[in-house]
Length: 116
Image (cartoon, one colour):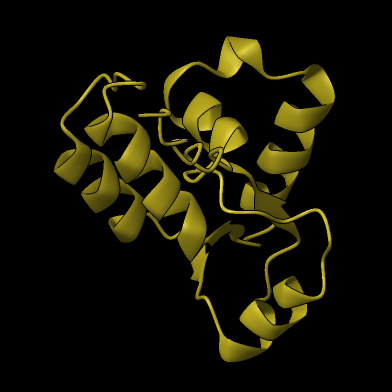
């Protein structure tokens, strides 16, 4: 069956580790999907984001990353949505996107030769 909900990174992490931080409507929606055997969709980029956050020590998981990913992979309530060429092409047309890892840096000032 096709997924009904696409979870973002923070919702996935709360679903797995701290459901008390989810709203009642969020929990109801996800529980309803699972109960009706509709998988919860995860973008492949979500897994990359989690790995990068853990690698940068900006996210501490309750279990090692490989165990968290193994749990997600083995759990039929999740369906991984791969990155496709079409998604990447669509993203190229979104003006709000920019690479979060590279902030614009000022050009170095040209040094002016001192008068001799």
